[in-house]
Length: 269
Image (tube, rainbow, N blue to C red; front, side):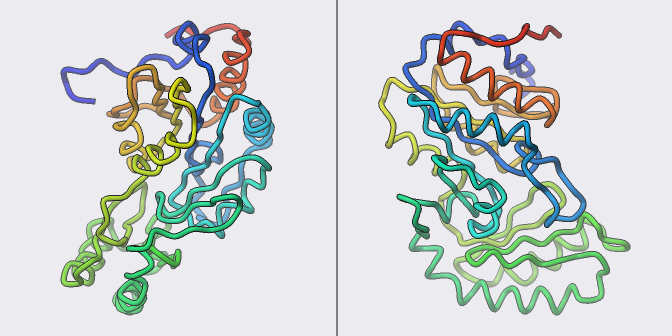
């Protein structure tokens, strides 16, 4: 959102457009969207309300549901475990096709460099209590949410110092993390565009997410699509819901919209 753009509107204000959809591609972030943010990156679980809502969407004949996360695919799939949904890990570098794992070929080619970077980063961060390096096979995520003495700037400086000289790798940032990933023009927006090729042209796309990494997906949405930010901050999304607790209601509302029945009363702000 630039200073010239209005703040994102309440997501429950788009029922007329949603009612015109022949079908929906629904792409959903995991952490902060389907699951609450936790201090321990291993702790988040999809809420029961969201599980039921996602299953309801996945069971609908006119939807394709995809969970699009920065998590490793092997970590993401068991946290959801919903039949009929697609899974996308590592911001699109890993994804399921007919239930089988596929990896972007350029990411696979950089795995040795990534392994060497991980070893160097872990050695340099060893004295920073509470900082953890997560190896996600084709990317790394350095978590500092629980850091006791190190600042975001301290951690970022170390990671960039290791990664910058390595051709083919780059750094990125998210909520309390620094990422190391292959230098590929590939992100959540790219995988959303790929998923759109699998559904009819007349279908609309809904993307729901809370993180800065979700902005790539919001930016590729076209006219008639719906980018929904969870929370409030500057964003390319046109709509928002106030918090993670509101996501299940939004998802059930989408099913109602497909069936011509918008459930519940609309919120006003």
